[in-house]
Image (cartoon, rainbow, N blue to C red; front, side):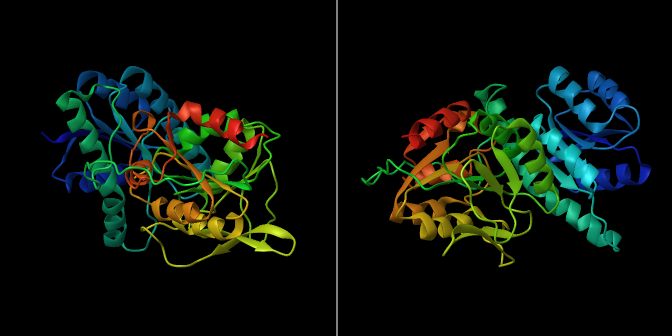
Amino acid sequence: MAISTLIVDDTVTYRKILSEAAASFPELSVAGTAPNGGIALKKMAQTPVQLVLLDIHMPGMDGVETLEHIRRDFPGAFVVMVSGISTRGADTTIRALQLGALDFIRKPEGASPEENFKHLVDDLRPLVRLVETRIKMVAAGGGATSRPVAPALPKVKLPEKKQSVVPTRFGVIALGVSTGGPEALTRLLPCLPADLPLPVVLVQHMPPLFTKSLADSLAKKSALKVVEAAEGEPLCRGTVYIAPGGRHMIVRQGSDGPAVGLNDGPPENSCRPSVDVLFRSVASAFGSQGILAVVLTGMGSDGCAGVRACKRASCLCITQNEQSCVVYGMPRAVDEAGLSDLSLPLDDIAGEIVRRVRW
């Protein structure tokens, strides 16, 4: 049965465009549209809805307030935010993701309607697969709280972990995350103390503009300093450096110590920034000092090759466990490669980090 979908946007034009984009997927069935949050909630009370495409900025009840009502009153519905490309839109989108929206898509602003429509469909495609997988799990008896598993990776027998020396001292914490990341980071980073003795370098898969909003939001919630990384910026203890959206971030070891490098190299794993790119550079810059690698929720396998490079140097790897992931894709790839030393619930990871890096 097709996934019942509600389109919520205050403009007639975008309700039509989003409806046509959703209707292009045989997996989706457009159950209706609504011009604002209040009407959307009334329609959801009348007709079961499994997926909501929700505009961020609407008069009256905006997207974030509507999301809060949906999360409370219709917890089984998945919500994908539809965001404009602006600082205001980015800030509000980050807040929605931190509140539990599954993900977001951007309203394209190209000159060609055909190209804009194609962008919308391409952005929706992986999210449709994700929601479909989650619904099938529930139908199979997974329960309402089950988390979706990335469909691209089949179940295989986990390999035995290779015996390797786990470092007891570290020079850096390297962290990779994707879908579900803003919510996960909001739960993880505020639990780390201001006197954390290491720098943290972090890739969150996200387009330009949104990573600055994410850094600013996390900085307000955390004792650590959290910044969007800049070219040549020295790495300092107690600071989290988030890779700018649309650019690869690396770490260089220079005469004055480690520093951030940014580049526009080709995407890896269809991602820029890429976790693998960051982790390989960390392996080169910090391999002799010890690396604490952390891989959190996300689709795909970005980060697996990077952890392998870190392991060839000196690395302890923590992965987020399946039960606490929004998408058990990136951690699963590391787990199934036998590269994870600890697979932990999200809320246990900060305490483990602190225990490992304090000596």
